[in-house]
Amino acid sequence: MSRAERAVSATESMAASFAGLVNQVTPEPLVVDWQSHDAFEVRNTTGDPIEILGYVNRDETSQMPFVVPVTIPPGQVVRGRTSAKYSSWPFPTLVVLNLRDRPQPIVLRFANRPPRP
Image 1 (cartoon, rainbow, N blue to C red):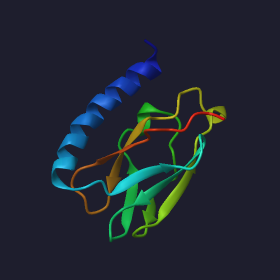
Image 2 (image 1 turned 90 degrees about the horizontal axis):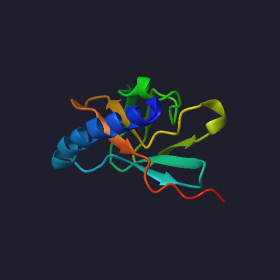
Image 3 (image 1 turned 120 degrees about the vertical axis):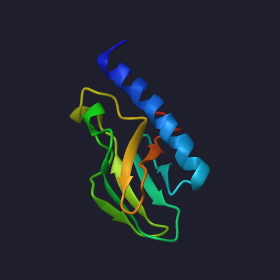
Image 4 (image 1 turned 180 degrees about the vertical axis):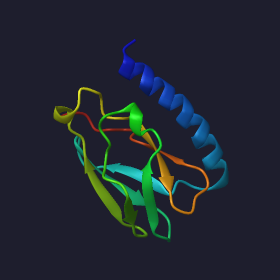
């Protein structure tokens, strides 16, 4: 198993623990909507602005999906792109985010990515 695969596995394990706690208390405030294999939007599903302060798991991948800090208005999106040319590591399957006014980080999963055309 490569270093990147071990890092992804460890992150997924940690994220599953975080996700279990967060999902018991609140619905998912952010969701990923894939626009294509290489383009996505992170949508704020709440009625309030969400300010993403940073990544908890920043050291586990060299490619972050979008620039932080960022504030996403209610019902709006922040757009991002994947690109293997900037990194030898794979695009993350999830990120753990610190949000303003939230005591616990949240897990944002990049699931159901469309296949490459």
